[in-house]
Length: 187
Image (cartoon, rainbow, N blue to C red; front, side):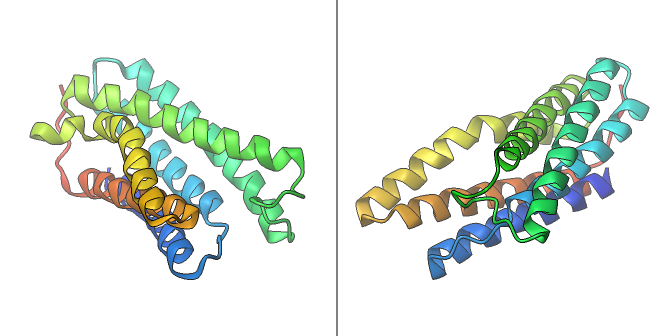
């Protein structure tokens, strides 16, 4: 699971950087496809490790891996557009870019849900760490509520967006740490 943790942490760093750069420069860098690629690759690696080491809900590890691969494909499509000069977040971006963002987001979040259930059920991470993947999903909405409240009090939509992205990146870095540092136990 070390590889999975490193990949998730690298993706999370992309999200953290995007948020902080947005707050500092008011310039929206196109780092979401990179976040999606690294986290989805991390979830693919985690799915393989869980499939090999767990006994309960092994099938859900395979589902999580398949969902992560959807995220990888969506990310690669968005990256291709980005490399060829289309800014994915722009209004002029083709519909395929929007579809790729949906695929990378849905693939990553649904893979995290599936793998989080497997990790919790099999106690694949030590102690309370096993709840972190599911807790991360549950924390996503409060993160955006807090960022919205701070941005509204300052009167800046840029701060709202940037803080939400930065806090999301920080939370996902913790997930990368957990996957890298916590011992895997098998049931």
